[in-house]
Length: 356
Image 1 (cartoon, rainbow, N blue to C red):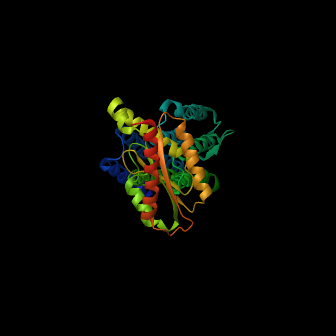
Image 2 (cartoon, rainbow, N blue to C red):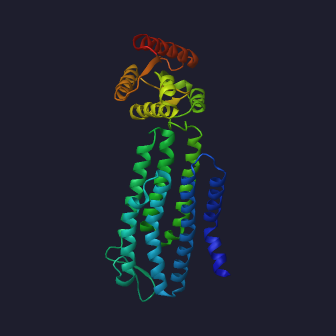
Image 3 (cartoon, rainbow, N blue to C red):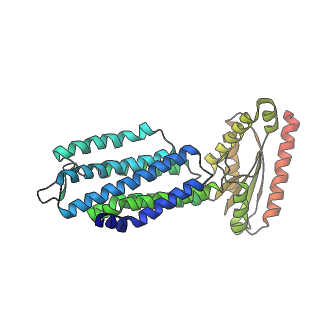
């Protein structure tokens, strides 16, 4: 009973976070079933590891059962990269067997270390001792952390609103990796809490971002557009209006699945050409807007040319209009109207030349 009370005392914050995480997963409608299931597995894995870590340090404190401690250390060293790979599996949706290979190899080496001490051993005073390759678990976890952060950044829109939660996750993961080396093994007691809080907070950020994104394309949605022009209007000095040409014909002749594919292809071009302070939105079926903050006219024209070039590499076409002002305080509605009028003229010219 005393052991149970001690576990609850040490891990109560983690338990609350995991319960909150579970409730959020149950009530959230934004994620697909596979991602939700993977996150449930991750929660269970973190909880079980917290129990194993507790018993490991409890027995080390009691100076009892060194052979059991070896097994528990093996579990902790092996489970940590598995947890990061599960995060990759859940959030990035990579194939599980590929990302598990380094973790499996480390687990095999850790099992061998129970008998040889090459990674860790327990001395005669029942103290944990690092072996000749004792830093290997930290190197493997570091590899997973770098891979996770790199892939998340690569898959993001590279806008500050998406980079901030990734930076937070990176800070949390690397603190969990480095602090045991700086502070000592005592920090390992709260490793599970660090991971649990980090993943939960990132999940909340992710859900908030999903409410701002278009489900089909991953671009920012109309509601996000309204938010940006209301809250950041003073910095906006360029607007680009874009319409896809011929979407109705594609839907009527090839079906809506082909139309969705066309829209997603066009959207992918936006991801490739937009940079910092350039925000791409899908505001209608085939209607898109790019909002630029603190842009020069050269920046604007370069963005438009890059977008045209990227779209030209596909089998689809777009019509473009824009509005630019040196003065960032110009009325947004007037800029929208000017941009739309130019875009509609471009569209009329396209259809006059190519037909509908």
